[in-house]
View (cartoon, rainbow, N blue to C red):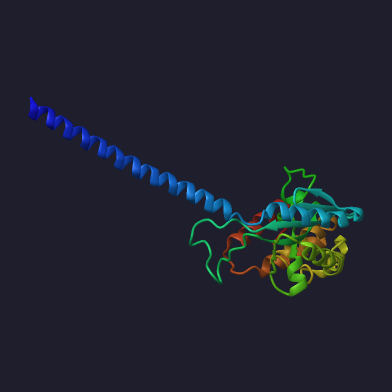
Length: 257
């Protein structure tokens, strides 16, 4: 009986020791998780969204008297000729994974933003998307696109968000009042867009001449068909999905190629 009691005591001690070890490990993990949370909290960067909201609000205060309306981070100004001018604030995406950033190929743009410019030809958009009836147009809806930073610096320029963005706001407002509206002024009527015939400042898309052919075709079937055929004949390679798309579009419009 004495030996049995001694064995029971040893087993009990062993069990208590194991529990202490398990609790000790559990406590370590708890401390690690807590420490990690505290580190993440203390390392919280500038509230980029709030700061960008401030810049956007100050810029819109200058644009609103000029006829622009706001929808999210996008501003629209509707002109008489069915032209919609678009200004959009786009923030850099949060990098996912340690290997997200690849210098020279994929940059980390988190904490930065760019100002997109666009011109939407509403009749052309509705022709290509007949089931949609939009009140506001996004930058990616536009047939003609550019970026304010590119107009100002000659390259794709992103502003870095900081705690005090007064200087950045002044740069954007000044840039819009000069280069931005100068770019818009070359594209504020259908006649100007058509006369450029796919050249500057309408150079954002290789299919610009197809858009122009369609715009002309809406009002002048003969002239528009001729422009359409000229565009079709320039598409290379001869066997491509885009050329097939244009061929099907010609059948729909009853244009003989």
